[in-house]
Image (cartoon, rainbow, N blue to C red; front, side):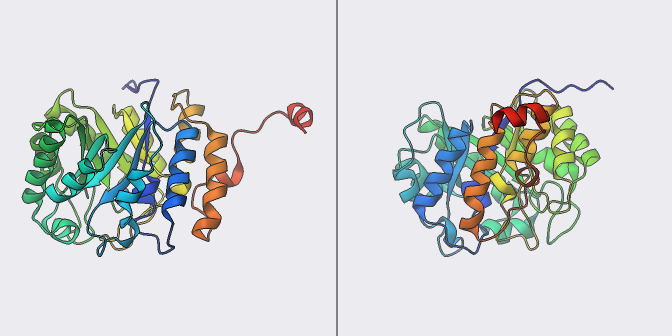
Length: 312
Ligand code: ZN
């Protein structure tokens, strides 16, 4: 079977939200804004800047309004705010700075209850309502199906269930449907099957994929997703990330690792690898640890020795 992937893949930067939400270190609003600016400077044009959730549940996102107030004025960048319910949607829209709402529904009842206090079916209805709210306000919305590849509480997740959810959510008119491997249990064959099933169900709605590298399958899953026709990949600078409601969940696939792999494979991401690596070097001391990304440690593809001398 010939690969069907395109020559351009969009990377949505999720470090300011998914990357930070599970971290113990308190990251200041100013530091979050600097991270956002550095990501934009590295070429990111769509970025998940925060989530509008209960600050008692996710203290790291308590400054959502303050972050939005000081977002850079950029017409060419789409700022995404994650919301779980109508109240979150209203808060996000009230900032006047969020271009796109991120709605989340969850593939299992147990995880849906823990994550947002409702059943899986209830989360689908909530996501549809959020998409409608965004559209009514002249904005767009993306939708993510969390725990699409496995649930920390219920284990296996039915592919038919995920496909059924994608079809239901697509009816509300999101800009895309994302399948999220929230706890990093997916494998490339599963990715291919699920994308093919969802694509058959949602027609032309673009597919975004969200992977965590918890078990080292992140990049393999990204590649399988692109071959299966996914147009957008979520990634986090440094490979930061985790979910406060999913025990054992580790970092997102790292933006610099994904960008390196795709660019070397001839797929354009619009990102500057050296600026991503610089951002990792800036972020690592703030987080007080080495970040999981590999390419930031090794550097990009080596330049010939002669060139290195000229540069020195
Ligand atoms: Zn995630």
